[in-house]
Image (tube, rainbow over all chains, first blue to last red; front, side):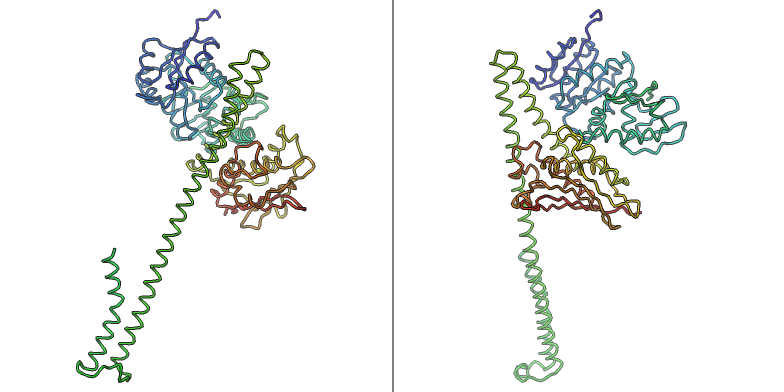
Length: 239
Length: 310
């Protein structure tokens, strides 16, 4: 408790959600500012400089997407979590394009939001462009071109299915973070699959084969038993 | 529209008119009525040919009109059916939401009014159970609508491997305590041909069928999954010796949110089989079910998928 309390800006037009989430986040030790539309969020960011923004996508006056675009355009790299309404694949892809650091589908468990908030804050380097907003990611010899949907090692292109590539993308934008299978599922697949954990494991095996990464002594991806996966090397983002 | 059909009628009658004209012309204008004299000449042939062609054209025209009217009726029927289906769906959705919502309300009232810690905790647990049910329903609805929009992966899928994986996943759920599921796959001559498609979605289909079979059987009854192929089609069957599905429900069980009389009060979103049917259709396959409630009882779901071409 020696550290100063972090400030969160919560932007959502639904009062029942905000009224319940704000006290919950405050109990977790944050100072919470609440606004109900995008324009107000922009003002609050300028006046209060929050440490993190939780932004709902569908809001009156200015939606979350437009708000985020303007922030990033003005070179404001405050870490942002987008609350998306529909579990659409395109929506998730867009969330990346606009430089969200993470996204969460409604309805979500408040504990899940808290976990994401903490993870994003831990990852954040104040004032710097986040990995989630970078198009080219490198980790050692591994290069991921997110726009072209291609990955290569030492210039050799990797033969990956789109799903495996998205898994790699999610891991590389969340390096040194234990990512659970459930989270990969909702982020990459969009829905919770009934046999979801196996679904993830299958793609992970494919990814490791392509990367020639030995699960027993991994260079890239480590299995944290009972928890999930962790991308080990540090990642550098560009553009 | 009226003008156009007059023109068509005129065109149809044109051979008749021209036949009559030619026959009159051939006999000269001032001869007695040629038909009464009955002799085979050029004029007569032209007249008869005209009559025949006109009759043919007329029958084609009327037949075409009938087909058009019939397809119009079919279209109307399909539209009406779709509208009925939509209303049925909304009614069922209303029903599915009503129950957990009622539970949630009651739990919240208890939470506000009760003072005992234990009571309050029970109320909170009930509320969260109701919320889980609603979330599951929403998640499955989302899957169904997502299926219509997403682009499918189109890669070779190893069916035996997928079956094994999904069977293991379903039987290892706590509710089924690792019950035995027979998995039969023809291994000779190997290898088993692949299906082209989206492995994850096909997995959902198989999983839902296996999970369903486990849900509607007890530990004393058996569940079997088998795969066969004939070079063109892969047949996957999920069979159980459970209580069976009432005959009157059989034709409806693939409908969204339909609950058969034996499935009331059973956990589930009511969308599992609808999802299966949609996924199979997206892969160019088909699904059918047969079931008996008298001995030998049981249910068999049969999925046919086209083998991927090399």
